[in-house]
Image 1 (tube, rainbow, N blue to C red):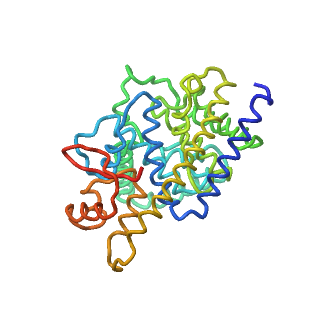
Image 2: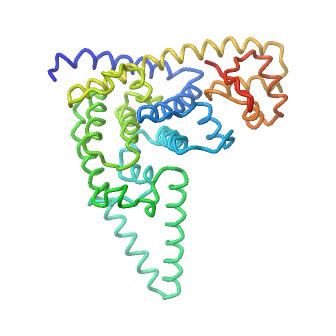
Image 3: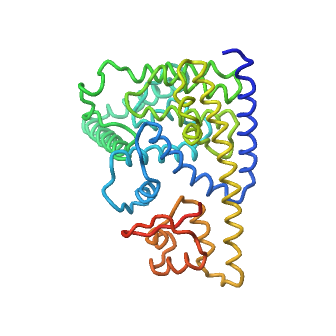
Length: 358
């Protein structure tokens, strides 16, 4: 694509993203906005992969209060949610490092050369020298290391952050698919994008992820890492952009455009759409907060209403049981507080009732 075709959409995306981040910088509901949008983007990620996950099911599953047995799609959406939280809570460039990727994937990635490699080799020699003092100490250290490795791998599998090696059957997964080499190739590609504008670099990085296909599973990780690049480049210092929300807002023909150039433009437009939706959500939620705070006039300092307002702003929806658990009150008291605030009920289900600030 020529620069003429991409310059205007790129400028619009850069401007929209900067306005959203500046709006969130001093926003009183920033933490709630970030917490809510994690849920929206996780559900959107599964939607882009052709799977439907109800937002209320994801919220209840995250709170360990499932109304029914979790589906495979729900556990995958929860893995996306957990990954976004980990990236958002870590240093801006953590997810793009070898150590960050290894942690996100629940595996040990090889470190090639450099001070980090030398440091690890030194530590290994010191540990070996210490373990050679006695055969008993060596056996004990090996036993502890094996236990630590099993616990770490099992925790990653149960959290949905990595696939169990025993489950990688040759009729499903390609045994010759070198994920470590492909990930390293992708990391080398994004290093060559440093001179590009942040939004264009992110679009190019996601297109490269689609072309290289580093992982046989968890293809959604490329979109989350793309959002992480915007944080690392200082374009989104106060939030983790919701690229899946933006992609979902695009027309189908734009979302499934083919070719490197059209794909670049697709992701640039997705960033624009995500920023526009983020601004709309922020303004709507902060207005709702002001309206709800009117009910606090004349309340006692021990009232649970302020905490309930903050809770409703940090989650897409809340059931009576969830409110009771977070505020340490009874479900009946939770329903009474909801009635005082006049928050809209959205589920209409007989098994449980839930309310939300739309």
